[in-house]
Image (cartoon, rainbow, N blue to C red; front, side, top):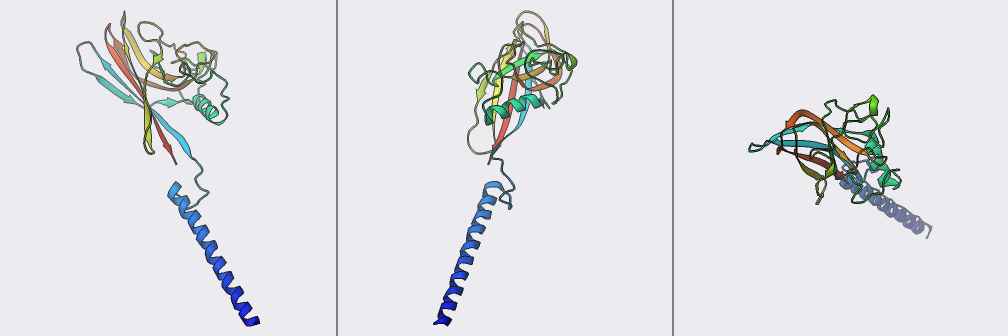
Amino acid sequence: MNFLKVEWTRKRGIIALIATCAVVSSFVLGGYVATGNWNPWGNRHYYQVLNANFQECYTPVGGTPQCQSVHNVMFNTGAIYVEKLVTSNNEGFCAVSASCSFNFIAMSSTATAPTAGQSSTGLTTAATSGDCGVAGGTGGQNGAELTTNGFAAAAGTVTDISGNSPQSSTVVKTFTDATAATTVAQSCLVNQAANGSANRVNLAAATFTGVTLQVGDTIQITWTITWTWS
């Protein structure tokens, strides 16, 4: 009887060991399927904003589009705003709404390229500004946002993401020169139309080869935000 009892205990131990191995294997395999990483603790990012990309297409009256795609800057302060909005809804600026979200495009004639570390929120001071072309304030780009002649910041047409990761959403706006020749050399993706505002956040900016538009000329701005999630 003692012999049978020992054998039965051994069998139960083997069965438990097999079951444990199966559970661990399933966990590791499931983690690999979900993250592409054999270490199930190695990838804990469930979603991520990857990048913002810029293109402009200038079209003279009666002419053909002339397009530029350039590298742009995503500001650290703009990224922090998005992070706080997602994690705590306590970003410290305006409440998200139709009039406060990153579907507004602003323009500037400033040719000085910004850097990611320049502060790009709120009123213009010596160190910070939410206006386009003024990142880093009067000690940074030290430029000015265009507010007249058809180039005031305005909401673009938004195409939302759909389907599997990765995907892109776009914000597109066409500006038309209204009354006088105007040079544009920079575009920004901002959270509201009004410049010179304490609630203004500039998420990203792109500096491109300056274009001088004549009355009736148009320039189409496209901002593309690429997303991935797992």
